[in-house]
Length: 355
Image 1 (cartoon, rainbow, N blue to C red):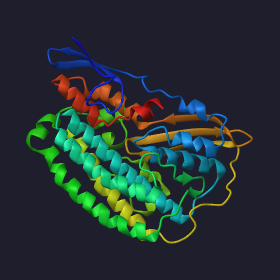
Image 2 (image 1 turned 30 degrees about the vertical axis):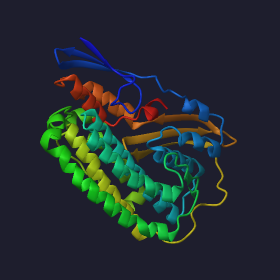
Image 3 (image 1 turned 135 degrees about the vertical axis):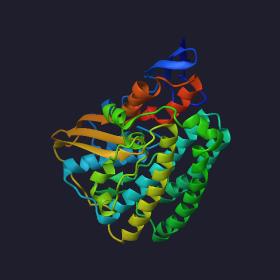
Image 4 (image 1 turned 120 degrees about the horizontal axis):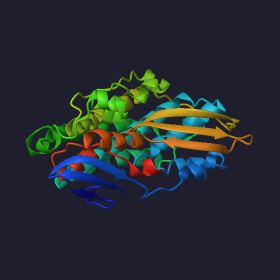
């Protein structure tokens, strides 16, 4: 029997259609149908200067706009051969990790909603508000974070605001520590453990990326390649189980790691300039990959003689992870409700995917 889920469904954050083929309750095949929120952002960038196209990059996604903004800027900085000042580099890291924290919490919220535990879902959103408040204090916005600029950041942050961050993070981490065991035991674990398994070999073959791959034991994170993160002694963390529970736990563990990275950046940050003055765009092309909350985010940009964008391609992590979900996770799921939990555990961002 064919069982459709979506494009509108109470457990889906964004619209798409999942087509399930079942024998009894067991799922034997799956297919994803996209195209409900395509906006043509890559095409819209062509012909624009970097300081106009940057607003399009920040609006690819409302969940992780910060990393789209940052990855676009770092790609353009490779073309322009511009290096941001040290203070700007650390401010970028602080915002990037706060954005990761709030994104991971909304991802785990969706899993709780997918297993019909609305109370646990609302608790995750409550914790997320703490991260959103910190983002608003730094940037002045909660959702669309137009903060990174060619050669630095848009606005400085007062020292008093920076000093208040560690205490707020400690409160957030205490809450995360409380709720993590709820996914690992009791009735919630009955809906998350040994469901939607993705082995390390399958994750590498798919290829999955980001927390989804790391929850299956793949030890790679694009932050390893970033010079600022290297200064902060970053190394990826992984799980081995590769099921729905492991993916939830991976995100919780990465929240703790993000808080530690922010604290290290705060220890290193010093007063100074926040951007290079009057950077000039050049003719050229660059490909750059950053670590978004969901994994590898890659921008390819080519500029013309006037420095305007001649070609732009964005590859988002959900492209890879949704395919891994369809190819390796959904088939063999015991029931249709399990398929919803499996899909949500991948934390796909359809706005990013369809851009």
